[in-house]
Image (cartoon, rainbow, N blue to C red):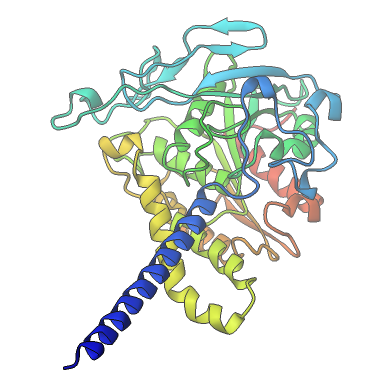
Length: 423
């Protein structure tokens, strides 16, 4: 074969390899970028405590749904409140955590509940896996955890409505902050319910480094920490409802699974602390939620014919990459693998409690089918579950579309806590 032909063939091979590498690098970059957006969406923001919550017009306070409420409960509604700080539930006994602060008062120890359901005065972990502390489990090398401090507002309900203390812990969605439930304060206060609005780790002005959301793998311990906080003698709620929207709703449902032993089988409280559950605009499983977001986002790209050929293999790559990133560096990965972080996998094994599922028909992030699947996953003999579908409701904006129906079903669910009628 002539030398020229050999050189020509070599050049063709070189060009082909170069083109393949360019295409591969482009795909890898695109997959990495899209996976990053699932963890840190455009509306995500995290600020230091001294910076305060983001002002109007800046992420995450850039949605019409939140307007016109941009201040505090006092400035917007005339409701008194106190600033609070409390730790998330620690994962390992050797954890380091800060004190609890309520207004100007600082308390070095918060009452927590151990795996047997007994209150304990300790700054150590609430949960141990069975009777063996995590740090002494064979083959488990666990680093010391610095427990994040969570910050929020505590608003007391109107007095004289209930013979006991009842309240709602509100869990905001991914990338948002405590103010996502701000517009709902007036009707909850009037009905006699106290409210805890707080920022999850990596959100608002709670502790974090701007890592984004984790789709339920560690932030569920923030929700559990909030429940421990309001149930402790420092606050003293007798009945606690969890209400969440979007990713926050998933965290609320998972927190029920955590205390009921549906996530870590060896970790279960004989008596639950969560008395009611309200889920708004959420998803069945993290991978299903990620897929739904990607399908909507990629569906808006130009050249629909080309995108229809790309998305079937691109979306699974993005979802797999995102889930792999979330698994890496998670502390509990070194302890015991979670059985699931999907609501349809966890809720069937939780204790019966009043449960309301809310969704809008115009939700383009998580289609309304997610709500039906979650509702059907709850056992049929659970007579205190209900479903509210709001026509035209967009993602996490169902309250704005039909506030009357929203408030009515919300309060009906809360009234079932403990079975005690108001005065």
